[in-house]
Length: 290
Ligand code: ARG
Image 1 (cartoon, rainbow, N blue to C red):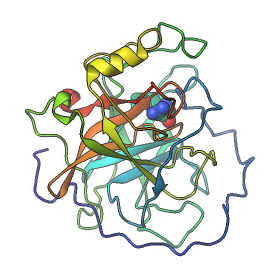
Image 2: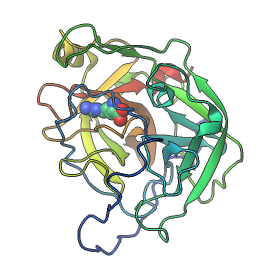
Image 3: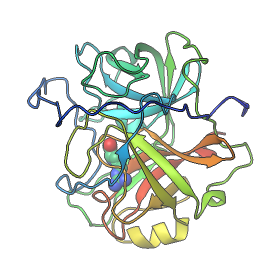
Image 4: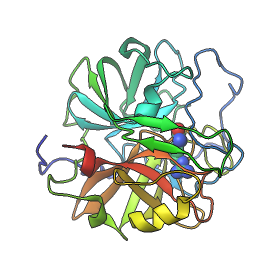
């Protein structure tokens, strides 16, 4: 898809009136369908340090949830990149036994804001026609955190939707220009969004956003020396107390150039969340777009 002048433009968004407290009541909901998609090696560390997004602010954000659920309980994020295509992470589309999740079991939630409110956003639920996993995807998770041998590469997948969505309502995010390389974004402020865990809530209802700074690949490599292999194909981002976390995987890391948001990363993994010295690691979209 060529970069066009319409992609990546955020909507003004509307601020939602706060209704007291976290409304999530179905804490022990339907675990049957619930997959354990987290690649975070320490599930007890929980910090994101972001804010609630505004309603309709990120028109390209999607959530993936198991098909058939009455109330969507997302396990991953994704980004609309064209009328019929969503970009997400491969590890979101693997079952716990390592097999691939069939397209027929994935539902894509578009235009959502507050999962506990049926009246907000511009919600659409879409079926997936076909799943494309990057052929070089590889993962190895050591049994313990902070131990050597971790490896997660080419965590990039495309979902072809059964129906085209209206791009007047759902603006796709821009892909990096063809000549882009990850190092172009070193030191830039990037935005990650998702319904992944926050410092206080495991599954927030309202879409969260956080700003993090893209690090150089070398510094990320040094941070992860002795735990995960960091190599070309990764792009890392961090700031004190700010990070993506479990459940945000597959979602967008974008950098704004003039008015447009470019998808520079796909949320992939990290050692805990917002751990000092361990940036969030994202799949490098500029590398994998070709
Ligand atoms: N692996 C997590 C997931 O499956 C997201 C990882 C992001 N972690 C981080 N520390 N930045 O949802």
